[in-house]
Length: 304
Image 1 (cartoon, rainbow, N blue to C red):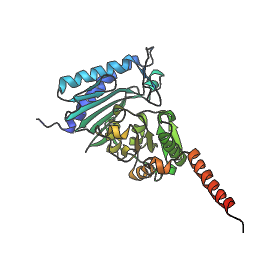
Image 2: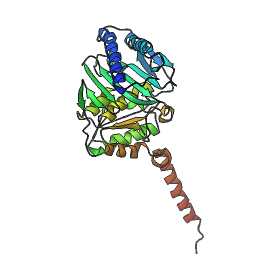
Image 3: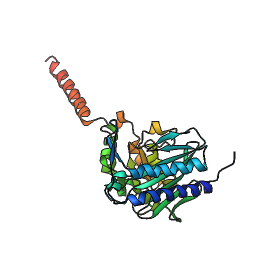
Image 4: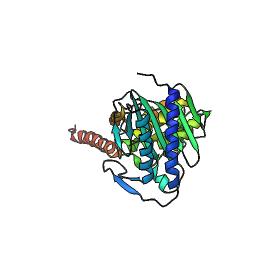
């Protein structure tokens, strides 16, 4: 088999992003029919989809099939083929469809190439602002062809943290851990979708992104972009984000501008539920039970 270089993969990923731009832009801020996909096991059951999503993925899949017919494809709109291949392309034609349909230019086209299940090339393309981040293992990350790097503060208490919405976390463990993060950081911010990861990678002032309930197509492209810029991106337990690990990670990701922030975040997000996040009602019940037992023992003692 002919070896494919990262340069070749990056070049082709840019071709895919160009093709997606051509399809998406004519729909921008124009009347468009919006359909709803319902997934009742998710915190936010309803997810919108448009012709722009579908047509952009169709054109990218066609290009992949023509250029690399042995490669796998994992797309949000049209499913999976050959995901056991050495190379798999993971596509999210419009990450942030809710932003797209409401005219907010913080959505993005996400394109990743995985080798043996590990993301090695990632693209975040914002077609309206004409901004494109490209990350590749061993090559770093660029914004419109110019190298970028994370900056980031020293501690979580100084950090600016993004999440797309506080409603993306399941009640219980996920929501409680995210609330703890909100209480620790300087300021939690919302509503940027994939764009939040791009601004962390660029060192523009955001330091950390914490999210949950993501599909593989929502985060694979982000990993090479963030890590190529000097950041760290894993699941909540510090495990690598790979095709193989997706079911274990359950779509819970954390991206940080530096190792120090990542260690602090994992110390909160990676703690076990049983030891660290017992619901307050349970803790109160245990306290009352203990107090009752002590009082009962004291009252039952025979008087001398």
